[in-house]
Length: 278
Image (cartoon, rainbow, N blue to C red; front, top):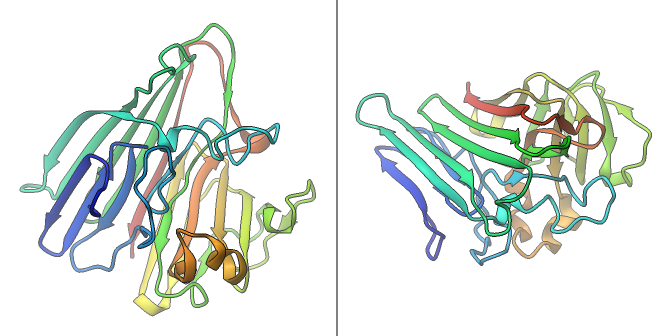
């Protein structure tokens, strides 16, 4: 784990690494044996209390961006900077090569909130899975947005493409995020800023010829796929990205905007994202 990082779980083994931080219950490393890192963590990332960490898998909850009303802070909700409680660690590195870390949200001031949230990170050589379970424990309907804001390491953003979204409608946040939807034609390519919220429930595939690999992003319980890269103007202007904007792409499972989740009292919802290499 980077120097001065928050407490968490980190496992190194021959040719690989798994790591997660307790703050935000945020996975920051999945490097299967003999592979380039799959999760990207910015070399300019700062580990400061209350600040979102750039990279890995930040948990966006209980709102996306500034929320439905456009005035919620912090951006993307409080879960990614909250002190989650590490409930359990299952280390099977010696047998199956698997590591499972389970968290629950346990931040001061949130105990009376009308929900419980649990996050499970399951690392294995061939697959990495993140699962967010939310239960409405209150007497009223609980409406929330969520996303697993995954940063994927790539050989170079100009060479990669994202497949699996052709024919899906999307909102173009880079163009202002108006109500008019656009239909994706062919692969998603990156020639400038890309910030899109797709209506999409299937797999997305990051094709990276530079590293001779494809990253398959599967999901369950998700109505949206978000694709983001800040591009050559916004990227260098972000203090914790800078010239490294070419090194990653975000592809994330979620339920946002008009696909927000509504839970009746006692109901639960599980959002799962499964990542595989091929």
